[in-house]
Image (cartoon, rainbow, N blue to C red; front, side, top):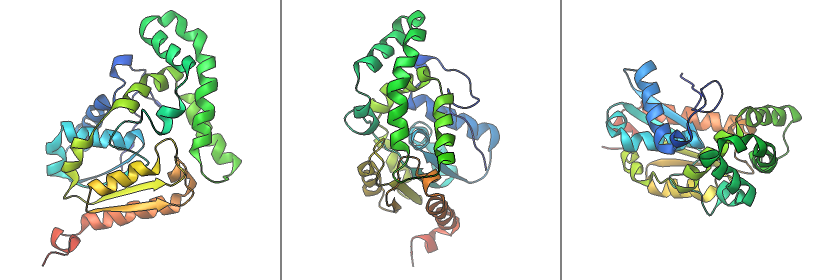
Length: 246
């Protein structure tokens, strides 16, 4: 299995504002695959922006999907933007808008706005992470990941989260097993977005996790892991058996 940190996250470097796009994340995923998995069949698993990255790569590098990808798991994600729903609507705030402008036009002012913007963003992300009461240790773990991500990176990605549209990529997955997983209490990327994905992918499996929030893979790991294992098993079957062709 291969895991990597998206640009601006974890141990990856600080990206330029112009590179904080879903389009670039798709190219990054392609680069990771070419670097560490140059041959063989692939199952892709992506959560949130990770799922968007999969769709972005499929649109820009369709040959990779057609020739090598045998399955995909899309967790708490969407094919199109979030300007009027989910996190996009939650973060419509003058302070956030001013900080975005400062990042683009006045880098020297960015430092002064970090605290105020984090005070807006962090509670939103924290509240949306879980739909149920979870252990304090799990809350602390996910909060540490949020806190370790630069608020500049978060703000730089907001526009692409709001406006991106990778709907054209869905056609690349029409004949590939896909599992769409989402908690129905996710209000960063609402459950309706996963329903739309499932409707667009007639051979997909919808896994609705009751009361799950955005970090459904941490909140209900057994259900999410089960969905991944079922997908891998289905993807590994011969096509005739997989689709019941006689």
